Length: 626
Image 1 (cartoon, rainbow, N blue to C red):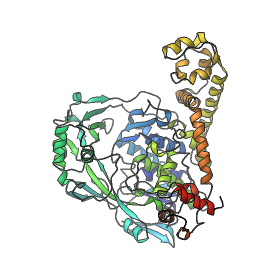
Image 2: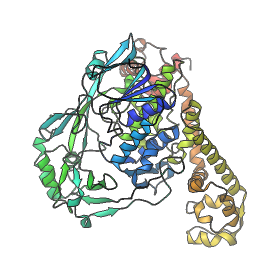
Image 3: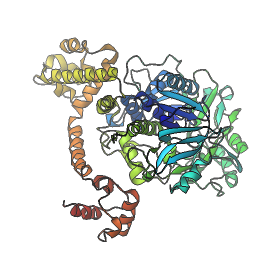
Image 4: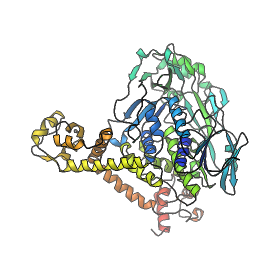
């Protein structure tokens, strides 16, 4: 007799792994069911974690006590901090990782967790008790009962792979699709749709002439994803390589357009605009003579490379013929062609901010099933769903929801449940209106205490946060009270192209100059050196840099906090279940339709729904007596 569970997680991708780990670590008896236990957190597309806004999400997952950052740090083969030339709100960590070891390490972590059982199978149906979830049943005929279920099915729900005119069923190349669940959910009244994503060819590195490519090395710096000290890679670091397409390549690719499922009407699902296929690039940017491509290693020792920027569903021979007209690829061989995949997703406006479905109590969705794309976005939803499934299983009504001014994760989920999607959703810094508050350096400051009170983040993390905040504050106090005379600083100021001092000033006044960094001052100011010796060695640079950001951008930070506080007043005005929108004739027709469909919990959420105008919000405020 198989046991009952508090939480069952369906799917072992990035969302499923974070969800299962979170609920198990919080104390819920958890079962993770996946079709292939050799592919936990599989990197189906590029072998990288992080990037613009995505790197901030990975740091947030880590600050909450998740594992994406730890696994990425231990399997990194190249690390870069993107956007260093811009302000700190835009700094985004990104790592190339060893794809095989990434998945292996995730399996080791999952196998070591108490409260977590693993099962290899395909879930073909959900079990219900009235309007509440009761469990799942699988392809092998096994039934598991549970208080809550989290679906993290990725691209496997009715997945259909396209290579030219050739089609095959699958959730990934060489792997079966998942059927039956979509139909069952549709019969229950869930709105579904089809989306599309794609992946490039995989290159045999032995057949590439690297002398004709531009090398892109990683950074040798203290930056990483996890806030835990001592988490680092032992793997050999590897370079990426840059090349470009050319008009001859474009001509060959265009010969296959009639056979492209994107152009002959075979694919109906919407694809991501920000990560287009090479054929979409040629159509959208027809005036461009070349497109940049990045050749990325798949691991520390493998000869397999990923060709970023060359996603395609053209016939395999057209892909290969065009490849061989690219500099350095004249004799290239491939391991497999690029392909497109269509899959089912469910309209995320059918979810609460906890990621529990509004229609079925105890049923949660996380990851690409909600219309998102990207490992990071999936992992973020997974950890929130895992936390809330645990809280739901306890039955005390607690919820864990992050606001838009607290985390990129909060922005992500609010966008999904409020606005829905009409294409695969990817996070960008531009989606966050409070991005100076949501920096990668302060994810622990924003989230670790919340997670610690919940019981997920460890005491070690909380102690590290307390130590960091203590030294930050002491450093700011020190430079605010320590005076520096011109004789000790003017030579440096001149070298940095900024005006020399005529009289002594507080050290913070020098640090606030845009040309000067606190790191420029350490060597020449002995009292500052003595003070900084007290900062924990392994975290010294991170703590100093974070304190400097607080000093230099204090005005911007204060302004955004003020704006966030104003918006929070609207977040406090709860309208959930207070109106029958069909009867409010003062609202526009579109507003009535959108408000009824989304059923926002607060005025602020209603204000973010596309199609709801400021005048519609005023109507609701008047009816609330505001």
